[in-house]
Length: 358
Ligand SMILES: [Zn+2]
Image (cartoon, rainbow, N blue to C red; front, side, top):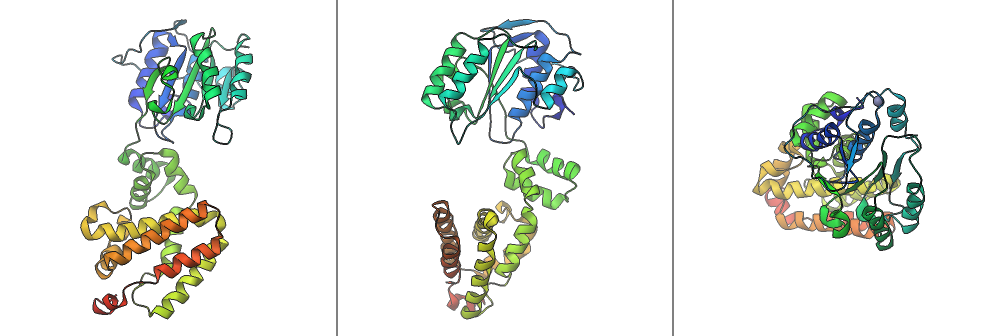
């Protein structure tokens, strides 16, 4: 599905883009804002296709200051997906659809200067040349000023589409020259349904992953591809679901063995610590508000363990994991950092353990 219908749960942005195309009032610059993974780049690509689809006909007019008609409803004039122009855009080989992305967290002035050289020439073959500047909040000051000059004197038959997380991430002088379209986080129910129907995941697990993804489709798909559910199962097994029933010595042995295995999975340590943090967060929260936990599918275990654990111990465990995350982000030795974290996780209040019996 190459058209607007392939953009998940963004009815209003799709309606606005459709309105622009149907009326043929193509602005020189658009700004798509929204969290990561809600379809901004996908929408930019579909918009580029729709503006240039050889199977579509629409009025041919570019406007500099016309407001988007937010009230217009319309059937999305979706691109065909099969003409020469659509195929080139889908494969990323259209000479007039240009993508600019941050280079190590920054969009540098050299990238925008190169763009200016290209824009000085006419489009090769497109009805409208489309320049997609992803994560425009990463424009460094020089690049931002250079881009501003392009926006002040926009080239003919050229549309700039900027994407950013928030409107206020951009220089006001840049944002004010773009027509703004806001992409909202994808609803929990739509994300859950997508994972069930498109990825064949059980409803219970899809519900959990949708909660973790916080409205981001890309985030949800990344959790699926990284095997988040399986990784959690492994971590909880290694942690032992009966953490408070062991003697202190046995507990130390268990957790140091876990640390050794975890340190060997260097590419998974970051995810593993996040899973652990969410687990201990859930144990704390369950005592106060069981409906707010993330690991809803394991609520029986959470209920039992949260009743047995002391809140101070859970807070200390959470802090220990967070501290390990910070140290690893600062390039600390993984094995030593994980050993220290695990030792802190053994420091549960055994008096309370015996009383409750933890
Ligand atoms: Zn087409």
